[in-house]
Image (cartoon, rainbow, N blue to C red; front, top):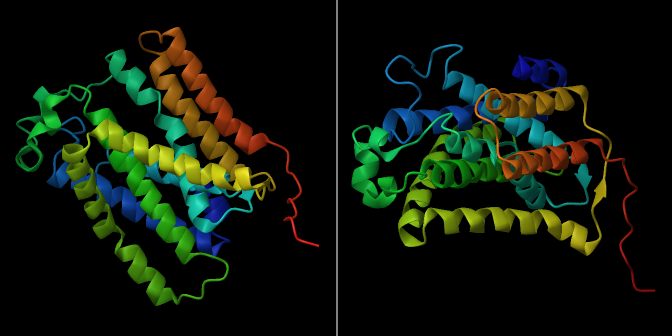
Amino acid sequence: MLLAVWVWLHGRRSVPHRWLIVSSLVVAHAFEILATGWLHILTHNPPSCRWWHIPTVPTAVVLSWCVGILSHMQLAGRIQGMAWWETAALDVVLLALMDIMTEVAGIAHNCWAWSPAEFVSAAPRVASMVPNLLADTWWGVPVVQYNMILGVVLLHSLVMRWLLRPTATFSTFTKACVVASLPVVTLLWIAVCMAMHVAVGDRAFGTALVAGCLFAALRPWVRGVASVGPSPGLATAMTLGGCYFLNTSRLFTLPAWTTAQAVCQTACIAVAMGVMLWPASAPKPKDKLQ
């Protein structure tokens, strides 16, 4: 429903938004098929659930990917004065707020589990390529949630924000070829994550990824060239509100959160809503030598 609202309010009247809708669907499907169907690093209620089923996951996961990517890209677009690659980094920082606590809290309260015992027999390709990947009970959180997914989102934003720059003059054919290549980019990133797990560890790699994005997102503010533009539209407000409500409410119905978890989740929501509701400001003039 949230994706339908987005498509109706944005896709029907904006060509760039149509490209983003298509590209996010391509990336989300590519990741889910590679992760569940080929590498088996993720499983969704096997064997009763298959990726093409509606409304069961991962079809529902694919649609939530699109809603999250599109709404957070639109939210990041409020911040003006940023280079396209800085805005792409901000996309990742804002999107991370939606899942940064729900996965950790969900596993802590046994809402769901990514236990190695469930994947040793289901992930022969992963086990053969990266033998130590399944040694950590919490491996799914840093490896998938904070390395693979955030990296894929970053690459998608970098490619699409570069492709759809106002000054870009790419043909429709060129854009279609770039979007069609995104599954290959997704596969390469998954391979990079596995290699970095062996080289430096998934937590160190995830921390470096998020820290790099945060640095790029804050850089325009430090330089004094960033400003807040007009408020995002109704579709962004509805999709963001829906995403945070669904992510948070599914945990409130299960064992109670700790105080620290509740505070962190509230802080994540407050930051995202603050970016959405913050009053617009005039662009800051650049300092010039007289």
